[in-house]
Length: 214
Ligand code: SAH
Image (cartoon, rainbow, N blue to C red; front, side, top):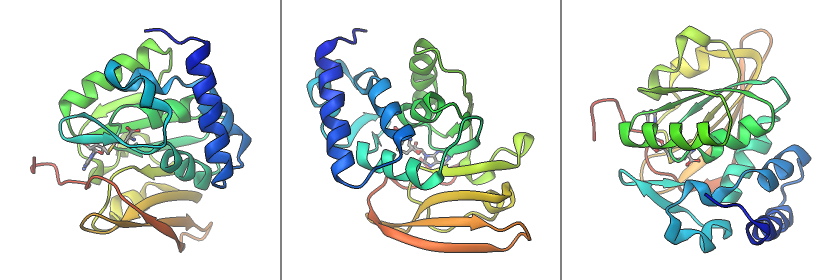
């Protein structure tokens, strides 16, 4: 895989575009400059990899729009060393952005094909998140609690197990809704274990599916 000055130029333009749309977390912008998004798409899409579009990544799934990835990441307030659970590894692009920001990332994917493919690319880039082939509704009890949880598929409801696995003081960003569109929800867990919830616009994700559905 090649990452040359042309790709870097395209990334710079993308960073300008998402800055114009309201992304101001420098850590997020730096990570977008650093992670070669075209590695996560089939070679035929190299040119378009840096346009603000979603793409098929196999198994009927899509890599999220760059702006969506940037927006969800910014909402999490990621810091170096943040322990983050991601539901829906997909292409591995969002996972890599979080790793690039210095987070300790745990990511779950329910499609074996995508789990295997993204594992290869992430490893090639030199990132070392913990990846799991499994069901995101269960979270990852072995490694709880998490400082942040990011769900990158449209959830029909907010899974209780994910709320349980969030650290007091932690933040979860999750698109909620059945059908084509979801409302982005930010959930903050207070130190006393209570939750505060706010809504942040409409987005479109592939659905968060139960373990046995295909
Ligand atoms: N973060 C990804 C987004 C991929 S789309 C990226 O940057 O490319 C969402 C992904 O969620 C799909 O790969 C889909 O297979 C996965 N998914 C759907 N339901 C899931 C579940 N219950 N548990 C884990 N992953 C799930």
